[in-house]
Image (cartoon, rainbow, N blue to C red; front, side, top):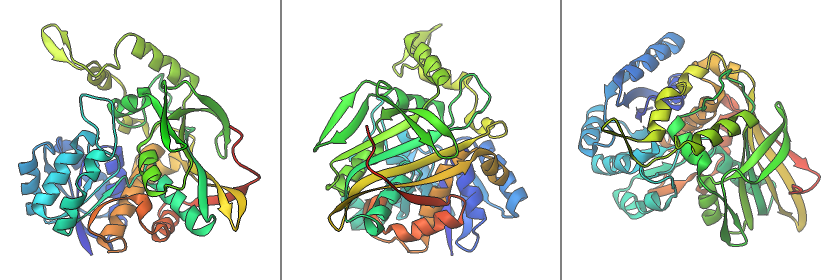
Length: 401
């Protein structure tokens, strides 16, 4: 039906490309490009072995807009799926506009020199994409992505209005390492160490990172400590569902992770400003990334489950009601299917589904869009059919905290 160009060759990309190959009736051609072509070739070999589908691979520096435009014109896809680093979002959007092709990503833009991410930079492309008759879909991962679709599905089917929304992200997996991150260490640590922010009463409230904690019992995992954080879907949900009075994001971390991260912060290894070492300028966090385990290598040893979902309280026919909608994903099952652990799987599968929504024309519009602006039903149906089944239950009342 359509050819796509995927940029980026990490764990999420590996999952997305494997799942695209498993849906050859939708994705009739797949090209994969990255700064390191050998990583693309390794994914292509795994895809060929597991599915029998051949994909084309290319080397590309996605910061080079002209080179990216040239590659797009060579491949001639109907959609560019950006699974590279979020630093590169704007450059790839520029290339898509120049080449006249639709765009999709899983994480919003952030500058390299500041641990700060928001949608304003990408929302500023609205007029240009609309004028070009092109579509840009932002944040088609799990969180952001599925969690936003969960919210709009609840509003469409269970609630007339949503008053409060809590997004709960639990990774109950154990990879056997003293300290490692389940996706790109540089992006992960920048995100975790940034100040927490949540939306309440029409304003943003900021608190120091990892200072507000609650315990919650997750089905399939058990009780875990979860910490208040900022995540980009809070910003887009506050904009597109303005009825919501309070939106919060929580993520679980074990005590050992918190201890290691605190020590690394205290000795300066999470800094993103340059330092001089033996006459060379280095970024401490990039050095730390180089010595930490590669996230893609953790799949074979990771056991346990993830549980990610939304708890929404609102009104239905004038009565206050609370619903919990979530997915449980097994690390070992994800690895058996795609060679990647569940953190990559839970982002890579929605990336494939978002791409499917676009290339089939199920979601079609000109401009820049977030997930919650689209009809949730076809996306939710594909989640159930492609490895991320969800369930919803009514709770006796709102969260007590």
